[in-house]
Length: 312
Image 1: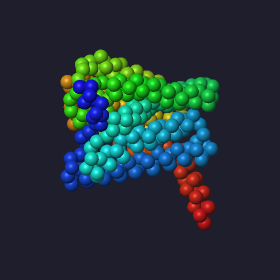
Image 2: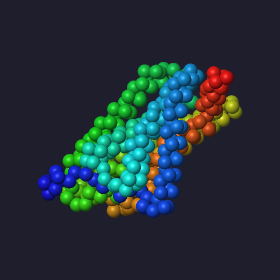
Image 3: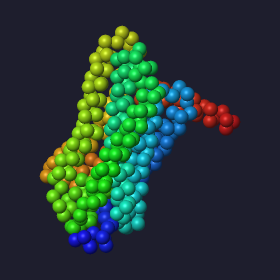
Image 4: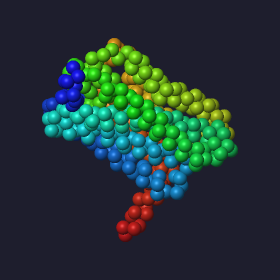
């Protein structure tokens, strides 16, 4: 067993689509989504960096969300496209570890960052006079660094464990990327202890932040309801509904996937749900935040205006 593991370390990714015309069409659709996500998130980062009116904690956090989404979708889609077009399905042992590490880091860090964004809106709407103190630049930086560090530590622990499991069955992972739960059925040993740790980790990094976000927006909606200004109420509701849309798209499929016992999961269902949080969400986030945010739309118009003026 040990000898086999040492001489055959590569894994096989079975992929998302069948190798036919329908699969090719769907793949090009995913490539189009990847292009939109890359352009949208890059533009959001660039816009927030350039426009002084967007140099606030809320948009600083949003720029980090765009950066995470950019890394997130770049971790899975390029390899999936390459494997499909080349006819190869293999991924090296090291490549699988790197993909798993970056995927888990982005997943956990983004969950924590979304809770920070919810706290930012809670303080801004429920305690506006305390906002400059509670959401100072230093506090914002600590939130961001904390999200990245905690996400990386959690990801490293899961990745190291997954790469040290003895694999004695087929090395064909029934997924389109190296997702640790999809690798567990290939293990020679009983992994129930690790599966319990996945449950605990998912609760800490996804479920509890989601419950915190829900509680924060409960207070926010209560405060919005009691606002006297119609304009202020409308602006607050638009901002919060935008964030809630993003949170729902991200958390719902993730929590549903990782908190279910293995006997209630199917590889096909897991792959379809993974498309939501690895591919669709990174594409939708910049669109939702730009189309439903007057400040972002205003910044876009100002930058396009400057670009047109310089061109002339």
